[in-house]
Image (cartoon, rainbow, N blue to C red; front, side):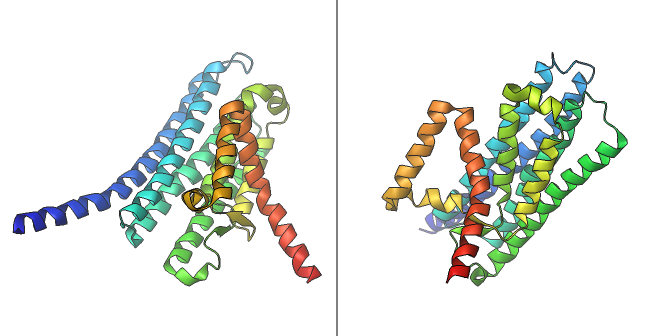
Length: 273
């Protein structure tokens, strides 16, 4: 009997490490993404036209960041199912997100923009590029710190189904879909290479704003009990299966735009009332 009790206690402790292990996988994906981004410098003497190898590096980095999003979602689900949620896990999750959805995308934007300039970039543009990358990185850091404070103050969030400001995984996804679609619009980004860092800075500002964004994790977690959400989820999956990258890009872009649209709508309805 005592042996069973001891085994069950050990088993519970091991089960509580499952969410933390998934969080570690998240951070390792971010670390790998940062290291792999630096491989693009191996192709710095290639021409922009014949630079498929360099673009494959950036695509792989985007895939690693998206893989981290899967681990980020799984650790939250595992913590709820195993009743293993803790402040330690929340802090660890935010630290991992800072690496994967903060530092990795910022490094990706800086290196990719250098690549679009043919690795010849003026000092003035370099300063602007670093400022844009810094705005994104700072926005992610402030966003995650705000999330941690909200988690410690359980009553600070009026509606748990909504975020105040864009979540960092959403911002990282928005940059990744641009990378995925870049080969199709290579001429546009070659002519306007600063579009990407300016977009990153905008996403950084959205992360620290009060703009409302849907909590996608809670939305998908409740599809079993909500027929409308189940239908919406199936339609989203169908769009990605049929249209693949363009479908994913449209979904992510609509999510980015949904925050400002809902925020403007809320302001308009308040004024009318």
